[in-house]
Structures are given as C-alpha cells and as structure tokens.
Image 1 (cartoon, rainbow, N blue to C red):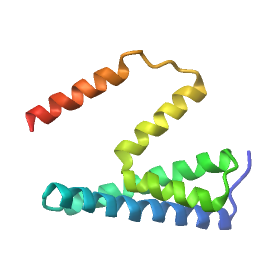
Image 2: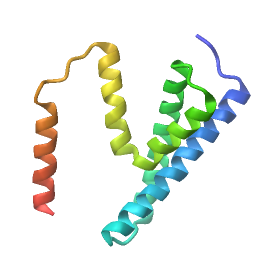
Image 3: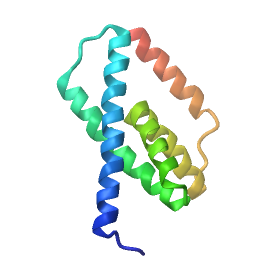
Image 4: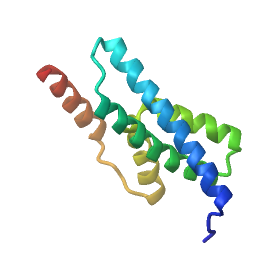
Length: 121
C-alpha cells in the first residue's frame, strides 16, 4: 500500500476544501430556492460532510487514474450535490465493486419513503 506524502495530503485537503465549499454553496442555493431560512449548524454539517465525500471521491478518482483536473471537477460536482445525494451514488459504486446485489425493489422502496416523508411535511 502506498503512503501519502505531505504533498499528497495537502492536495487531498485542497480537494476536500473544494467539495466543502461547493457543498456549502449548494446548501445555500437549495434553501434559498425553497424560501427556507438558513441554519448555521446545518450549513456547517453540509460543508464538513461534503468535504468528507469530496475526499472519498478524490480517492476513487485516483484509484481510477483520472486526470487531476477531471478529479477536481468531479469532486466539486459531488460537493455541490451534497453529502446525502453523493453518498448514495458512491454506495452503488461500492456495492457493485464488492458484488453486493441490492434488492430489486430498493429504488421503489426509497421513492416510497421519500414520498411518505414529503407528505408529512
């Protein structure tokens, strides 16, 4: 296993910051579009969780030998989408890579749960 050098860690920090900033901006834009007031703790949580997802996406891009410029673009997009959406996309990649079969009706159950949650609001 390769070890990260200081330069690698600083680069990773940069990708994480990019994702965190994108996640924070995405949160602000989504809440403004809905007409909701901003919540500072939620914004900080979005920034931190998007930064973590950005780090994971950066590792995935490195494993796939994707160009660093493309990696930055992909990390920024995943950050903008927010951690909730991004982690669901990453889960599918991990399941597929590990050969874990999702139940055939998983998407239907998730959509039904979302619809039920929206009805409560």
